Length: 351
View (cartoon, rainbow, N blue to C red):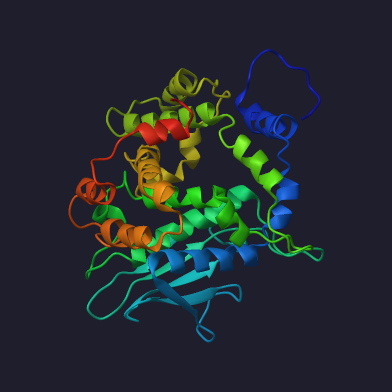
């Protein structure tokens, strides 16, 4: 990027540059062109419609409520058949000074005999400009779909005091429902509902979708090794923590991720997951992908991504139990057999 010559090594700071170069030059993926088809308002509206249809829910936006910023929106959630109030969720989607900088869900209250649960989604999507509405890259569409899946996991958990975070839901499963729902963002019928060019109003054309799909697994091996490295680092410092953490990072990173650690760099200083319930559990991100791939390919890919019976099975068999009982038993009921890893391996083109 600075015009320097190649020294024969792939450095940590090179990865994102060459990843983008490969996507653009070999696969023809132009994110600036693609994001013109994903105005934020269209993605939000389409996502809410899809979740309501798939899970048998009804969302109603509140028009008057106390809010901490004018951007914040509030919705109630009811069961589509009975009309029973299930919960509420807030959307707070644009960056501002002093705001949490990551994308995450915050559980504000749990279900009790006196109240329904309330969740909040915080994101930092690009705001609108003078020339265009807020536009999302395809990866940001996935992020929104993923994070909203966490809201559904929380609100659809049935029973008082049942929750899907902390000790109430296994940390190595809690990402699986949201990761599974990312698959919707690659389906033509879903993208037709999520996309609308901000000028022409046309959905994402097939040729651009084909390019995205062709590039879906670009550098997936490197990214998977990075997750294995972070999970190993996390587990190591919570089992046999060394006195010299810098030496541990310098050793594990090249051994596992195949990238040398830049001198003096120690990502533990910014590894926020270890301070927010993922301590000794970061491996859950990768293991959850094994479970999520199996759920998607075994049920939804075969029966239809908008099959309402499959969606209700998913809501009642996977989401509703929350942290009650054995997750493996719930998954076995939903899948019709114990979970397997083949779908994950195929999704990564390993087999």
